[in-house]
Length: 350
Image (tube, rainbow, N blue to C red; front, side, top):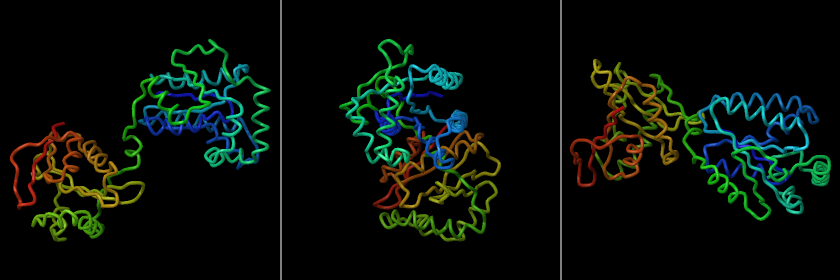
């Protein structure tokens, strides 16, 4: 697990840069005030011990996820040994997993930071900064009391960069960081954590049937194919659900049922060849990457399957692209259904 530590004085833009960096990488943002604000709200004051404990719990839990890394923001007092020790403890925690730690120091002119202290994004995410007079006075006091900008050559880290972002936009700084360290782009990790396949009970088949009709009706109206799932009888869906070697699963995103898939074997004695038929996503949830994640979760649920099969419409390039992205390849001959529509077969070998 990797870690990016965004370092800098108050209102230099650490959180905002982190937000932009999260958009273009597989890293999640854990900015300093995510723990500070709840503690102040609950206890009525800043409590460093509680904040530190909560941070440690977040670090430990995050290290168990599948993300590439975390972005952590911190105002480092370089003249305080405890801050050096704290950064080392965090560094050791992430490096112990085999990860890499990157250090990014942001610096900006005081006048610019004073203006940034008033921005909507900062005040939205940091309730303790909303009294501008107090927060500005606190920011200036911190600079007087601590040294929050490193000296030239002081940082001993291999993966370190110092950026003067006085005149740079947050997204430009984020791109500089990504390019400097060769960070990977976004993956489907977050979406995977939000999507589940839940087996459909017999009493839930009417809901599934309704969703199937709604999902396939636009295709039926386009192609008028007699075999469309949009005009399939409920009895046929029931029959498919009763087959002991096939199962229906709802595709669930954030607790909402957004589609469904039927998985299994046509031959009850054959466990290594499986079919995906049908799979559908409700129209309002299509083209969001949900189908891709659902198919890959199906692969994980059936580890003994060596060959996956499905068919789709040749004239639907987005569907073809989805299956090919999942690793499927066209096989066999084309099957002309009518003058508008042709079915093609796909296979995926694990």
